[in-house]
Image (cartoon, rainbow, N blue to C red; front, side, top):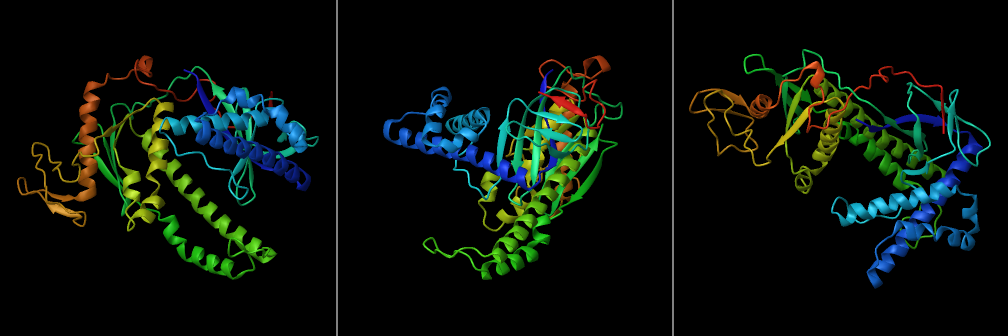
Amino acid sequence: MNKNYTYKFRIYPNKDQIAFLDEQIGYNRFVYNFFLERTTNLFKIHNIKFNYYESKKIIPLLKKGFPFLKQANSQSLQASLKNLDTAFKNFFQGRAKFPNFKKKINTNSIEIPQHFAVKDNFLCIPKLKSVIKIKLHRRFYELAKSIKITKTPSGKYYVNILVKKYDYTPYMQDRVKNTVSGADLGIKDFAVITTGASIADKKSIKIDNPKYLIKSQEKIIKLSRRLDKKQHKKTKNDKTKASNNYKKCGKKLTELHEHISNQRKDFSHKLSSRTVNDSQVIVLEDLNIKGMVKNRHLSKFISDVSWSMFTGQLKYKSDWYGRDIFTVNRFYQSSKKCSTPGCGYIHKDLKLSDREWTCPVCGTKHDRDINASINLFLEGLKIGQVLPELTPAEYAPAGIHNTGYSRHTMRQEAYQFIDR
C-alpha cells in the first residue's frame, strides 16, 4: 500500500534568508486572504462558491494590480489557493468551521511543489540564491514530492518534506499477536490501560496526567502581567506603538506556550507509540470532547490533556503498523458495569465523584478507572475472537487498512541528497 509521510526538520536561515522567507510567506498570506475575502463577498451576494481553477486564472491579473507579487513563486501562490479550496470543502462538508483570515502573528507557511533540493545538510529553494542550513536528524530514501516551510510564532523555522512510501509490510512481533488493550481516558489520570491476551494474564497501568499547562500556570500569569505593563496598543483606536520591551516579553510568553505545546506532543507521541507497539487490538471510548469542553469548570483541564491529539495519533499509527483500533458507543457504561467475569452488574447510581465502589452482587471492590479500562479490554477480547488470527503472510488482512514499516525504510538516518 502507498502512504504519504512527512519528515519535519529544523532549518536555520541567516538574516537575509529570514527576510526572504518572511516576504514569500507574506505574499502567500496576502493571496490567501484576498481570495478568502473575495469568495466570502461573492457567496453572500450571489451565492457563488469558491472555484480553484477559476481563481487560479485570476493570479496573473492580480500580479498586475499588485506588482510585488511578481517576486513570489507562482506555484506557491497556487498552493495557497489549493489550501483555501481544501478549507472551503471541509467547511461545506461539515468537517471544519468557516475559514479564517491568516494573521502575521500566527503560524504561517509556504509550500514549494517543485525545483527544490536537499543536499549535504543544506536546503535549496527557488528564487533564493543562497542555501539554507538544515538539521537532518534522520535519513529517508524516498523521493520528495513537495516541501512546506513553516514559521512558528516564536520565530523558529521548519521544513516539512512530503514523501510517498511504497510497498509496506506491517511488522508485528509474536508477543503482540492476539494482545488487546483497553484505554480509559481521564483527567485525574491521563489514561488507565489494561493489556493482555486473556482475562487471566491482563494487567492494568495508570498513566499520570502530566498537567503541563497547570504546572506552567504561574509563569504564564507572571509573564502576562509583565507584558501588560509594557508600552503597547491597549484599545482598538489607540495609536501607541509597541515598545521593544513589549516585543521581547511577548516573545518569551509565546515561547512558553510553544514549549507547553511541544511537551504535550512529545508525551502523546511516546504513549501512543508504546500503546500501538504493545497491542494488536486497541479499544477506546467514543468521547464527546467538543461537548465536554463546554463545561466551564473542566474546559481548561480537558484542553490540557489533549485527548483528541492522543486518539488521532493512535488511529494513524494503528493504520501504519497494521493494528486494529475500535471505539465503543459513548453511552456504553464502562465505569458503572462490574468487570468481574460472570457478573456484569450495573451500578446506575454511580456519581462522578465516586472514585471507588463495591459490587453488591459479587462483592468485588472496583477502582472506577481501572474497572472502565477492564470493561473496554473485555470488549476487545470479544472483537479479537471475531478477527482472523494473523500469520506472517497475513499482516494486512483484506478490509483493514494497515500499513507499517517499509521493507526499504527501516533505517532512521537522514538521507544526504534529495533533488526535485
